[in-house]
Image (cartoon, rainbow, N blue to C red; front, side):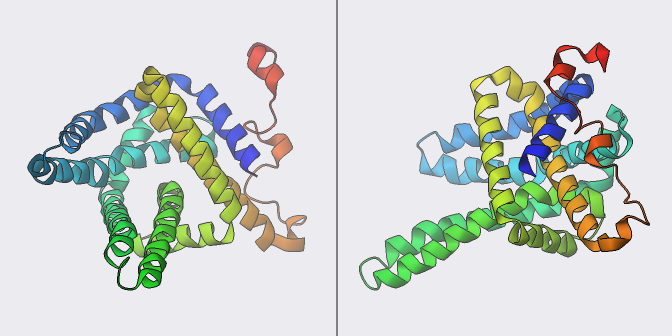
Amino acid sequence: MLARAMKMAFWITYDHLGKFLVAGLLWSLSLLVPAWVAFTALLSGQPAIRAVIGVPAALIAFGLVLPVPSAGLAHLVKVLIDQRDGSLSDFFRGMRLYALKSVALGVVFVFAASSLGTSTWFYAAKLRGAVPWLGYGISGAALWGLVFAALMALLVLPTLVQKKAGIGATLKLSALLVLDNPLFSLGLALQTLALTALCLAIFPLFLFLYGPALAALTGSAYELLARKYAVANAGDSAAQQPLPFPPDEEDDYLNRGFRDFLFPWKG
């Protein structure tokens, strides 16, 4: 299923590269200033600057700023999957529709990452001399919690724009998807890391395409998970009542190959 998600994401990006480049630039520019301030302060080596400027700037960048355009990209990808076409107006519409909920989710994940990341270090260091087994146990549990939160974060915005549910319901469904599909979620995380490394190595890719490409990958992953559960829930009735999505052989994002990339005019 991960290979199908990657294939769908590739063809979504390929078909809509023009609007993705513009949306990706807007996504990057929205993050550029607060992220630059945060990283400059955190890498300054001055504890006071880190505490007064770096930490607040990082919280603003990743908890308040980043979720809004990311929700816009998630909504754009949803439209492109559902309708096979869309426009930049869908990007802005997604930002408007999900601004408050995406910020709330961003705050939740920043708080979770900060708490779990601190706990991973704190208990192992502070309890190492007295009760090391307890310190390492708590730190290990915090580390697993941090990994689980990171896996949830990959699916939370596609879940938000697809289900249009509240914050609690969105978090619950994201957690259940990760719990029920651990290997798929881990593979998605590895692909995300590979995409991140590639785009950081080739900075223009990061500036123009990283946000949309990541949104296409996670949106495709959610779409195929939704199809998996739709088929499972339909059971034997699927033959009498067609499912609300095309089979792979009729899905334009899933039935193309390398020939279509080389000779798109022959499709």
